[in-house]
Amino acid sequence: MDITTAIEALAALSQPTRLRAFRLLVKSGPSGLPAGEIAAKERVPHNTMSTHLNVLTRARLVHWKREGRSIIYTADLDRIRGLLSYLVSDCCDGRPEVCAPLIEIAQQACCPPRKRALPKVAARSAERRPATVASR
Image (cartoon, rainbow, N blue to C red; front, side, top):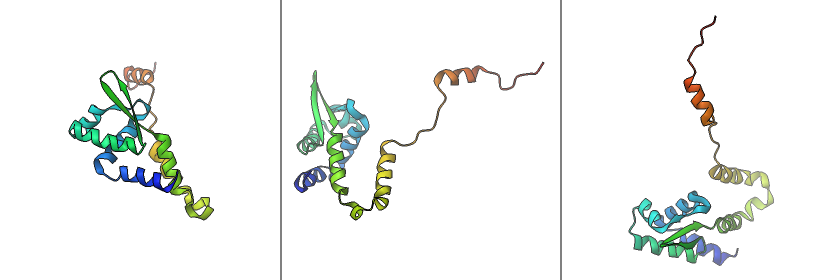
C-alpha cells in the first residue's frame, strides 16, 4: 500500500456513519449484509446509506454482490489488514517488544476470549439432575 491509497481509505472511514457501517460489515464477516439492513441498523435513509457505501466501495474497503433484488456488502479484510500493516510498518524502529502491545490489542479485538460454556446437551442433563443425591 502507498500513502495515497492509505489516505483514501482513512478519508472514507473519517465520517461517523461510514465508520459505523464499516464496523458493522467487519462484524458480519464474510457473509456480509444487505444494504437495506445496514441502513436500518444505523437508522439512516437508504439513499444516504447507499452514498456512504459507495464511498467505502471506491476506497476499496468494501465489496458488493447482487443477490436477487438485494445488494450484499462485505468488508475487504485483506484491504484493512494492508492498511493496518502500512500504518505500523515502521513501528518502534525495529524493536518488536515495543510493538507487542499493538499486536495484542489487535488480536484481542478480533478474537476476544470467550467464557467456556457447557455444551447444550451437558447443560440440559445438568438441569434434569437433582441438586443433591440421597445416599443409601
